[in-house]
Image 1 (cartoon, rainbow, N blue to C red):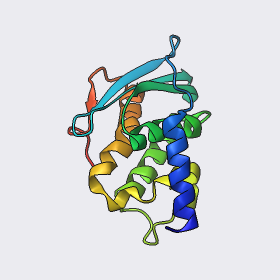
Image 2: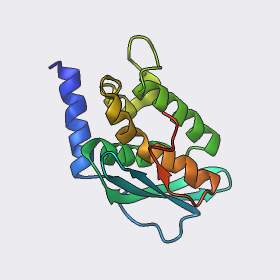
Image 3: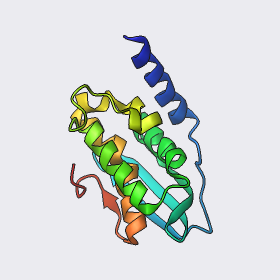
Length: 154
């Protein structure tokens, strides 16, 4: 295993065992629920908006290491972003984990999200990595339906 891959695995495990921003947000502007029936992952995502800017984001739920780590890192990278920036980041991340990103598999613009570089090699894990992101889109759109990985376009 390369040193970089070992580091990525360590970061994923740390976010899974000690998720950041794992809390309810009673004053959230929006929230949404997501569910991955294949893995059993469940997430509730909370977003606090000021105008068009995400000023706070948190989550609660249960899931596999990849799902929990993805939600944890999502909460870190989205604070301060506009809705448009969040949507663009969703697209870049989704392309990256589905193998439709850069041909060399690198994505320096994704920053911390690059730890998910190996997900594209395991298509069933894509749904784990993207659950929180699809749930974010639902929250930002104001939808009240539960997002499932079976209804989200991968």
